[in-house]
Image 1 (spheres, rainbow, N blue to C red):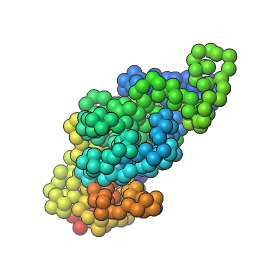
Image 2: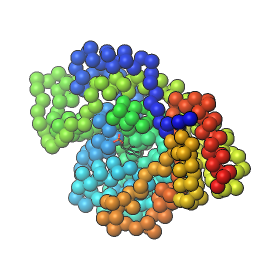
Image 3: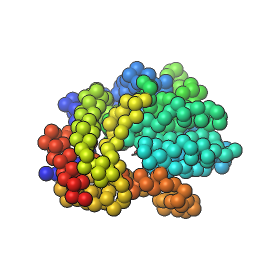
Image 4: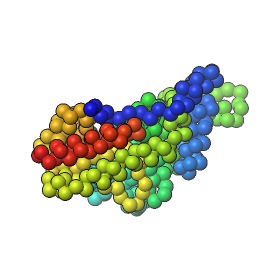
Length: 379
Ligand SMILES: Cc1ncc(COP(=O)(O)O)c(C=O)c1O
């Protein structure tokens, strides 16, 4: 049996929605689907300001361009991460300062983030790994007391909450991803979130080639024109129509993924795991997860690799995850060493992600869990 790591949810009405976007004619941007989606997030997730953009990477870059940090300003970013936040900082002329990640939560290590704060620090960019919230009260308190901006990389966190509030909407800025592998996807796509009206006014210009076209459209002015430097980060209507189809089913998508998560968590209570020092992931009780990732923590790289290669032989697509930023080519050029990032290094060596998606059948799920148990017993 072949068990894919990820399969996209295909809503029954998706072709009709795409057809309707095609028939409406203007596929460029700001059509009915974009409007409906932005309203959906505002109402459903109580999001203050949100705009669809081409990716979470563009949303993070946009946040940095809105902030416009003075040259050399520092932003603290966890090492166990995708490079987008660090790229956004570089693009805006800032300096990404990496801190360690917590080997238990896989999120930012607060103590190390606090230790990395200097006179040049302007903000912290935590990632909600696997859609599971960071401890936001502590992070917000740290940022408040140090006068720092909080930019949430909630690329994986669409639909997750912290104490009832949508991830991405708790800090000053937030970013969502609708990339193919995410819970709600449009192939490529993302959203930019921010707290202040004045930031959104700036973002609307920056994401639209530096023009005031948004105002021109909203206020029915005669023309729009170039106001400053900018780029084009606006999502088109065809991907917006695809995403809209997904969001119509957001409850079903979350429930189906939750079923997989809870099935694994139940099966992996077996004592053979504890005997081999393998631990299933745990969810914190301060928030709700969107069940983006399911992982096991292995005791060592050797055990993780034995399990990973064994399960691949069984036809189950299991995966490790990021090469930590500090140990990537760029991190090494920055002179960063593994010994200063023990948490991030440990996660990279010991995490094992299992398939989780809406299309896993009962049979596939049972086979996956059974093979994982078998392989663990064989260790
Ligand atoms: C934590 C994190 N941030 C940012 C991104 C980038 O998202 P996008 O592909 O939408 O640019 C990803 C992609 O997987 C991610 O995992």
